[in-house]
Length: 273
Image (cartoon, rainbow, N blue to C red; front, side, top):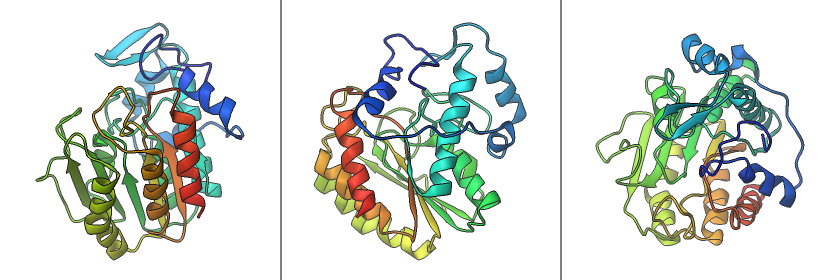
């Protein structure tokens, strides 16, 4: 994934994975199968991505090429393996903007959703909570699970910001959106977690928590305007891990190559406590 799906100087570029591979211990996971992916996406979307044979702009911000399909299967496979063993999937392209029918927002297949369906289908997990603290709302994950009472989706995100969804009125029985203003700090995130996320998820009583671990809410990330620190991500991870007997993390955003490895390491420490 550090070699495939080249995107030039796009924020979601191969150097993100290369930086993490150089700084952290890791092992490669097998690719997802088409069957794995089609538990969450239409065959038409899967075939569209598979058939790309030259550099293509799928949307104004989503670049694809002849190796994107292979990279997307590897990213989804890493998420599946993390769900299987209880790990942290370091993959690209990210996934939480990919809806059932559309690729968008740097995302092609929804890695965390694919891992959730795998856990339910192959591992016998019944109730899953997905906690998403990427700085952008995970509209794709919401789309996949909107009518599914077995999956509770929570998103804490900057509002307003791309993709323009996840506002205060966008709620449901198994859906909690927590829009936060720009310049929100560690304290703001942790207060929202304590007041809203913790009671809602614990009331749902999940067997597994899957975290869409985006790091673009960091104070030095170039794509947003939040002020979360390394310590804040460590504590968000610790609190996410306390929500269920098992926690799994899947990398989403985070576009400052100098800070990303330390942020992922801090989150891993929080998940492991």
